[in-house]
Image (cartoon, rainbow, N blue to C red; front, side, top):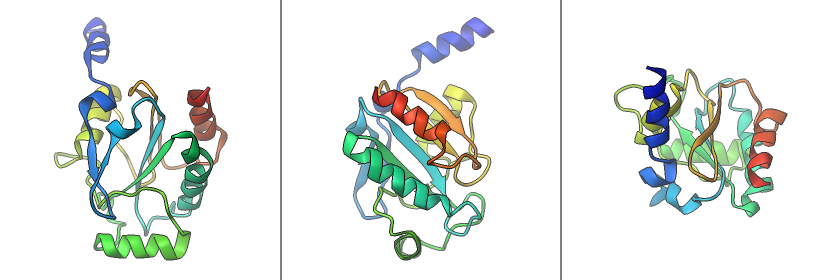
Length: 169
């Protein structure tokens, strides 16, 4: 059984190979293939969540590491019933309260049968399913899942910053 699980991980496609695309809150698509060879931090967010203050840290990561090619991607989700009613409200709320300029998707399912294919892939690779808002998934330059975190780790904390910086070496 353990050998089969290890073989599945070896044979499974990397994120870039799987061709994941998200619909952008600004229109168009966000294609993870565009970041092949670079670290990607994907965070499921919700505007009305108690962890929403982490938007500031996500923006700071974007400002600090974006010029080095790192993608910090916010994925608004109402799977935990704490997101605003539509994309326009989410975009306005995040712009007014957090001055966000980092890439953001449309409201997207991150768990269950309707989960976005990226989140289904992460679950298949690692067993990780977001248990709440502001869960984080770090993808390495090779397209593999490097680390996952729940809500509590701050974007500017050593675990997440350190994970990104190690991938930039």
